[in-house]
Amino acid sequence: MVLYKRTIKRRQLDPIRTKLVALGPHLVRKDVYLDTIQARMNREDYYRALPKLRRWLPKKCHGQNLHVRDGLTHYIRIPQPTDHDLRVILEFAPSHAINRIDPASDIITDTQVTAYQLAKLMNDHALMKYRRSQRRNEYKTTIYFNARKQSARNLTIYADKPSRFTGEPGAHFEPRIKSKAACKRNGGESVGDNLEIADRSFLSDLQKKQVTFCYIDKEELDRAFKREAREIAKDFLAGYNDMGLDDFIAWRRDQIACDIHNQTPSNVEGDRLHEAAVQDFWDVVRERSLRRAIKTVDVWSLLPD
Image (cartoon, rainbow, N blue to C red; front, side, top):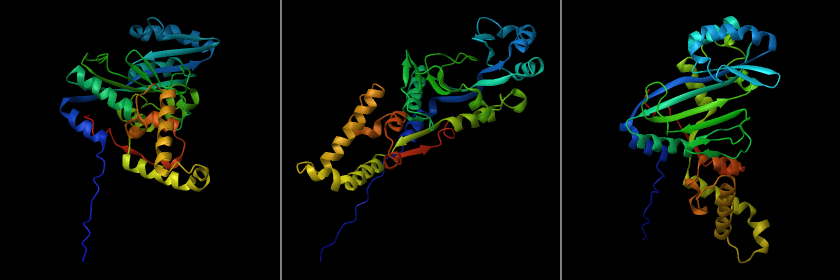
């Protein structure tokens, strides 16, 4: 009588939770705030409201922060607006239309090294869905998830600058919504439509809506490649007698790794696709069977308040 020993495969550990558990003792708190708001208005209302805004918002009227022009369209941009600033806009510029909202989070850490590690974790696992495939850009130490400056949605991550409010080290996470239609869908057409636009809970929900954190499940990805190879084996591999399923899977992995490298410089190899940045993998791979290997993790519940 032959006894068969049942083997239990060890499932891949969630890399995001593993990294956050290691960084947990070094994370201090999370500061959520509205980094920038920009409103659009016609010429008459703009020149009527600008002197009043300069009078009531004296500390935020320097340089190009409050006074921004773009052709015949007039904008008013205010950095780190408070509830008082929003009430001033609503009172003196009632005909405005919001066309930019930047909800930001500063995850404060005890050391600068931890801030860089947390920023790398966000860069590797952040995912912006419902967007066209765009090339990510790295300028110095800042990551932009969309290289086009005029894109309607973008994400900025950096850790080389201290907190704007306390000067402590930390990782800066900032989704940017930069179109009138996108702002209307997410925050309201004007400040009067949503008086809680600078509220912490609203900004946190807006960040969760724009960006999710995911990882690539290695086992699920292996199964997806095997299913794909079996489906096209009869048609594609019929004329390649010297190419087996394993050879085809290796070729397919190398093809995806090459596409990722062409879009964003990366050192990921075909046999280690599960270590690629999730956004790069999502932009390159269009097959739903392969995208199912991307698993979502609720990172916000693991970060300190």
